[in-house]
Length: 411
Image 1 (cartoon, one colour):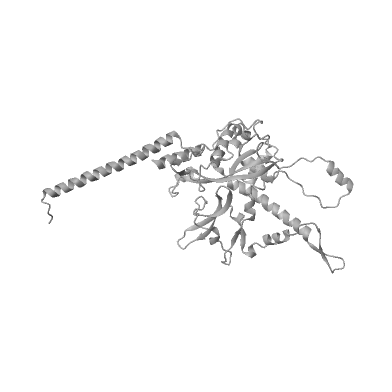
Image 2: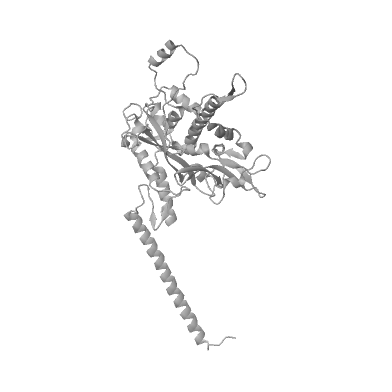
């Protein structure tokens, strides 16, 4: 009974997610908004470009920064697994990331938006941005710290004496990572097999949410990386082509969940290093250029389910036509985000059941109906135990009486 009750809660929670929005027949924009996060499947960049080419309204978020807030696994009913006789379960693990768009440089107490997106989509967009920034940083480092010969050929100097050239060592380590026995953790953002024993049992590596605050690479027992094996360390199964053990480098992956370093959505143009005459420079300074949003921010904003008006976000969809579903379902999105943040689910995505309390979507308190059901269940169990003891006593006494009538002797 308790299992059925918990299962009903899982199904009820799944049906209350913001990813099953009611469809509107107004236009294609409503259809896009309602299916935005269905099944939490990532959208390819080609699809994103098509959406942007359709001249859909896109709020100005150049004055905001993306800040990671929390990640969470959620186990919910999934049709495909229910139809698969070999699945062993009807619950699929879905991975989410909650992030904020905060006014750049602010404490993010007001005028911010809160969003939920699939972990796959979040990591794809964020790591590509981080890799591009890292490459650009190392290129600048090389240009500014390259040693050049003086005309007399006897002395060598730095191109820029005031430039911090400690970056040279860091970039050297990044470039020679594999030679030093490391592999970048972002290589395992997609689930992939890493080990097979002599009986054909395989293990897989993929990202998982650690404590809601960090994203790490873990060991899974299935090819979709839904069932995490916390007893295993992924580095115990990683080897290079020669069979030597290798370790993970987490430098890039850590950036995706660094709450202390929000990423600005404003594209900052690099300074032109080519020689220009003074008149050309003045003309560029006098021209008013339109601010541009980074591709990462644009992609994540478009793909995420949104909770904006609750937090006073000024630049959201609420005041624009053609986004009826987004506005109509915003309360559902906000409630679902709140449920994920409340401790409703464990690290593996199961509904938390502990200390006689069953956690529901809104918090950790047990409702009156749940208390009544649990009381009846416990009372019934105790009653059955008492009845069983009485039957046992009666049967024992009856057996002894029969033996005494036979003279108390046994052959």
